[in-house]
Amino acid sequence: MQGGVNIRKEAPGDEAVVAVVEFLSAFTLFLMILTAFMSLAQLELGSNDPYTDLIDRSAIDGLDRLTSSNGYYVPYIDGVRDQNNATTEWHQVPVIDLYNGLLQPGIVDNGVLDFERINALPNVTIEAMSNGLGLAKGLQLRLLIVIESSSNSSKIGEVLFEGGSDRSTSGTSSVANRKFINGEDIISVSLEVHDGASTPKLLRVTEFSPRPVNGGPEWIEIQNQNGFALSMKGWSFERSGTSGTTDYLYKEGVIPGGQIGLFSGDPSTQVTGNASVVYDLGSTGFLGVGSVDGLDDTTGRLRLLFAEEDEGAGSIVSQMQWNPSTGIVANSTVVWNGGSPSSSSSWYVSSTPTPGDV
Image (tube, rainbow, N blue to C red; front, side, top):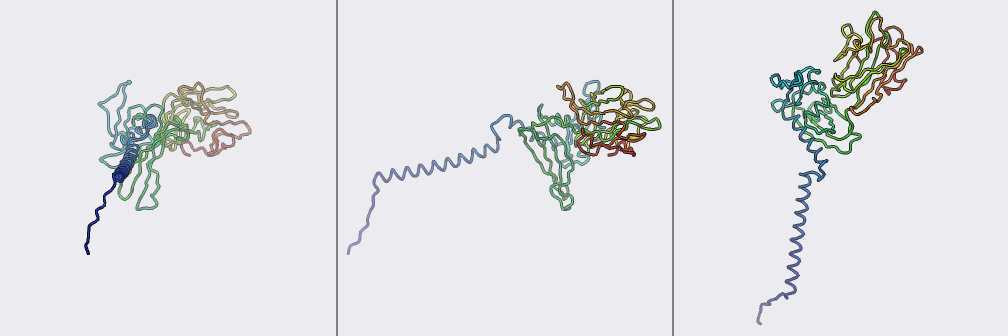
């Protein structure tokens, strides 16, 4: 019995089919690789919208400036930068001087978070922070520093600093985040940049004294409810009474973040409590002292207003009205209860004045 070898030859048409299949397979693989590459490029480069890219880059660059150095402060003398007295110890500069100088904020010293500088952030205005971080005009920021992880469970979630503008009305926002190890704690520093609301109107009248005793001064207590310092520029008081209506517009001054400012008819004799700053409203005639009245004893109205630079009239932030039925007697004060600051139901009369303490 003879054996043999069978030799099978593919037809020319079969070879063409195989070639086409191999080509399509290779082309499909190429498309998959190209798609993956483009997706990666999109992640690296961000969106193709220049405005969105601007906000993304502002958040990244701003956080880098804040967390890559300890910062510096340059004072001004007669409108000129005094470079000879520039210092990296900006956190030791008084709030008023800090407001009137040039600040490059920084919260890292020798590669680690500096808590003295973090604790000084309430002395920095939002405008100074925005300018120091190089944000474009019209962009706002919000800064959050929080303990994210710790061997001590009670410290987890502890906020070391929070302040800035609300993004509820923003159309575009971006957040940059960096984490630091501090002992057994992991601390998160997040900088959000957005195009939302302008500087927040978070100053509130918390107490005022229209009828002081023993020749003492009239006074108004203001609380800053933002973490950052707020400039008094654009803020004004308006008082009305039997003698008519008078207002006073502030063009300078600052109240530190989370702190109290007192506005007094005579700062030299004013009981200040825990107020961080005291401003004189006696020399202007707005508030009285001794036998001189600014606020009406029995019937009057006090308003706190705010106006942007391009606004002709200010918007009412706080409003208080009183009359004989209110029950204001000598040495009593009118106190805010935390409700709507323009509602009459948000105010009550106290017989225990506490200037500088909320």
